[in-house]
Amino acid sequence: MSPTIPPLSLHGLEFIKRMQGLALAPYRDESGLRVIGYGHVLNDYESFPHFTREIAETLLIVDLLQCQRELKRRLQVTLNQAQYDALVSLAFSCGAASPALDTVLTHLNHQRFADALSAWEKYSQRPRTAARRVRKIQNQSRLSFADAMKDHRRLGTILHVEPTVQRLKMGLYRAGADI
Image (cartoon, rainbow, N blue to C red; front, side):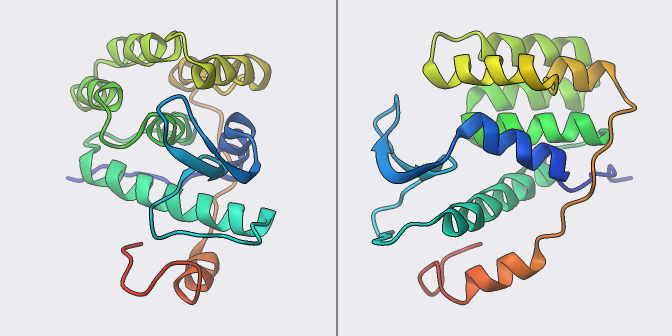
């Protein structure tokens, strides 16, 4: 039987936006990648001469949908809303192909929640600017993976993003881009 996986909640979306911060001009992150908006990694073919908050939010939704698609493919256990929101935050922050996410997912899929939490905390304690910002915001918002794993009562409002995806398909990405 496949697991029940909720979509990202509005609370989770707002947390990710606060964690990433908004950049209306491109910059290079710690890894040297060109980034804009709420942590969107720019591809070589992307150019935004008049980048706005609306474009940033649309790109974030598309990036998060891609993250969620990957998590749904790989996740084999049912998580509550807060746990899933925290996992999407990790996947978006470190990348869907990162060893940190692989480790957390392996532990989750074997229902070793304490080990998953340890792996999450190990990633969060790396001496990186983004990780420090994540920890600071998590401490302020109380939506950390630890809280999510311990507190099953925290549920968010479900985010419905289909209209945004349709708008995106009509113009922001080049024809044929996979969304």
